[in-house]
Image (cartoon, rainbow, N blue to C red; front, side, top):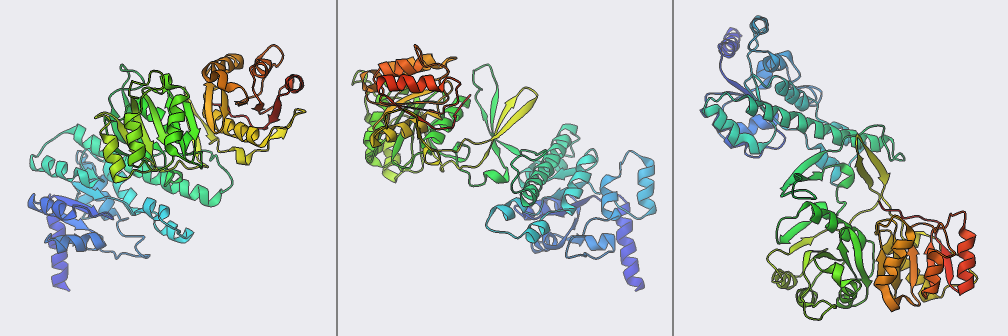
Length: 543
């Protein structure tokens, strides 16, 4: 007994004589052996817990377990290990405050110079397969965040590391005996951000467990992680970066943010916006479809059993706008389609090979990818998962954010109510549904003219609906006769306005939400010209 007490006393004296100490407690043990051996080589005494201590010892590192410092056993199934004054006193004590050091000496507590901690894999646990509420709770780390926050707060005296990628920089800093406040502050910032992101996942998970029917929590945090620094923003004089969203709700949500880039230049700010618009639009369609987008607006959309034909028709819809645009497909690109994309000439002159910024699809055959890469060194080739539904849509305004449910309604979810005397034929109603599916992706005020599962013309972004309608007819030309027209919102006027112009131009059926005080004028106008009119009851504004 006396010998044991003498050993403990010697160890405590050693810690109080200024021996450098590092506390290591990790769930993710990547590069742990290198870290432990590196610190030991630099003269550090390593204090550790459980599995981390075992891994270090297996790597030849001398370790003192936390229990030997606290003189208190791990308890409550591991819930309490490091929550002890002998640990947190040694982390939080300010070395420039004599009364802090005096208190440590009185209680036999040594200081820590380095704290290396990462947390229970809560995010992975709750996003990979079914997990019980009780199991989720047990995977919420308590001791880890407490250690990290304590060390980060006292970063002037304690180096805190939460990312294995920072181990080499830490060892280099210590080996050179540097004194760089910015390095310490950067590690502290990273530590607090690590804990904040972790807490946001726990908060989001708990909210959904207890408020399943409520979409909008009173407050929430969006955990963003930078994925790339962009060359510039919307314009060359604006700096920009791209961030990935680590919200639990977006796991397996698909979309452009998680797309794989197989070829081409890095994506720009505008590339991300346009690719997102194209992919969201083409993801709406079940049959083989091609969508061409320019400045976030679909300028060509076509569905056909033969995807090569769909591609040609989509480009033909507006070949001038399609040049330099984004082409998206909802099916795998094989060698034949890749060759068609590579060699297709503009319908405007039959000679100019079509140029695109981006091609995006859910997959590529090996040969298809090889052929497509031959089109251009700069062509960005993306592989994306189908965009999910039921997500929260956020948009920034000065000083705040707008949040709304995503617009997931499709024609299959909508009742098309006949308002006119004439009943639209089966093919006319099918054209109207196709036009409605397209128009929800066009910027308001939006008009789409379509026939035979092909968008013939669209008008977008005009301050008044009549101008958008005229642009759409200009694009569609003579093909507008017998086609369907869809509007994203009701027509405020009919006579001598948009509805009558559409009827006089030969449209067969008009689909609009209805809801105007002059709806009856639209009905009467369509009856006069023998045009079918259907109300959807659903508006698709897009600002």
